[in-house]
Image 1 (cartoon, rainbow, N blue to C red):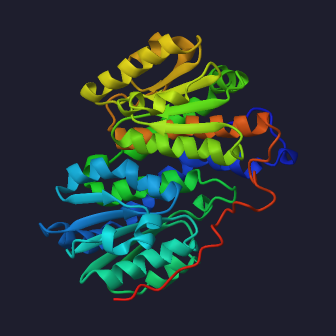
Image 2 (spheres, rainbow, N blue to C red):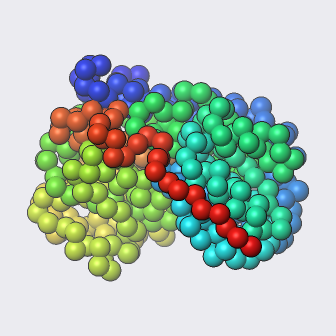
Image 3 (tube, rainbow, N blue to C red):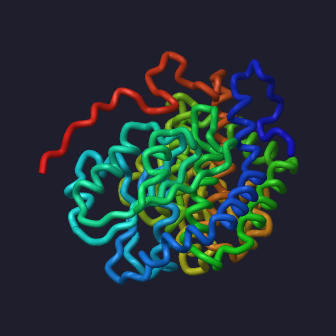
Length: 385
């Protein structure tokens, strides 16, 4: 696979980030093998829990890891037939009694790249303190992280380790996000997602090995936008949130990025638009939901200069609109929860190229240390019963 960042040297300070974007198809295949090899132990842990009608599943993580839960929540709720909520660890730690107000049997699914962020371990400990019965599925990229080590031998915990290479060395989470999200989908979603990892991998390989990236992502960044909007519905709402965060992170906050749903954007957030804005609309594969995505993309094309609105689509309109429609080849009909994992690569590439265009080092866009790869500066306070 070619490097997805155009001409890149080690001196550009983006080598880790570029490599970690490019390695995702290979790692997704590895995640598929890891989950398959763990299937017996995973099923022994998960199936008795899901069989309980009063089970609540809570998907938790901080920042990008929280958006993994946002992407997964709608699909897992349908597949499991149980209550599934996406609750960031940052909310859970700040208000555990509110986030875990119902004392019901709970499966807490924790996503963590390093497992060393202060909230990661605190969230699991607070759940144990507040709830009468809680089980932990820990999905992490770092075997040596505190979260993995503390839960490795606990009887009510199961640790699912991602490929070592997914523990991104770059500042922003890229392959760690997609690997953990895919692992949870395969682990909890069951046989409905057999073969999806290979389809996703082939789609991204096709995108990154073609000249389309230069014609599309490069052209969008070359417009030197001041603001970028990402829109998506259902699972693609979480994708839009993650996309905006990637742009903010890798450009050091110099490119304003916001996210919303296709319907929600008109209710105030549309005020962000000016004539230096661009918009990326993620098109749902669900025929009903897609109609709302098509409506907002058409409306925005009437509001913004030509070429300022693009759609990311696996459907037939990916071919119709030329450079204004970015394709996800071979993914027509794939559920949106999986579609998001290929679509996010476009946002990762936008963020990387926008960072380079501003002369930043994407591997460390905050050299003064005001924001860190692993969050620092959090004081954890005791919760008294």
